[in-house]
Length: 38
Image 1 (cartoon, helix red, strand yellow):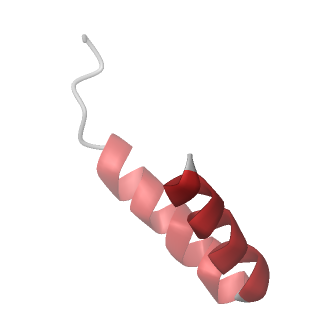
Image 2 (tube, helix red, strand yellow):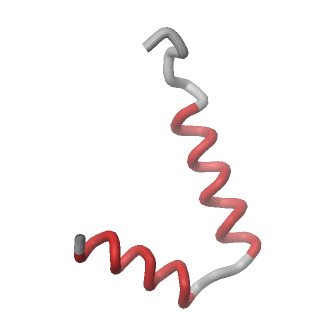
């Protein structure tokens, strides 16, 4: 739980459109290669 709070605080303190784009890209990259039949 503390780690999640740390990530949330980092996001709040460093918010930018570029950070949102990076998070979106990393999410698509990670889940884009998962077998849809799972």
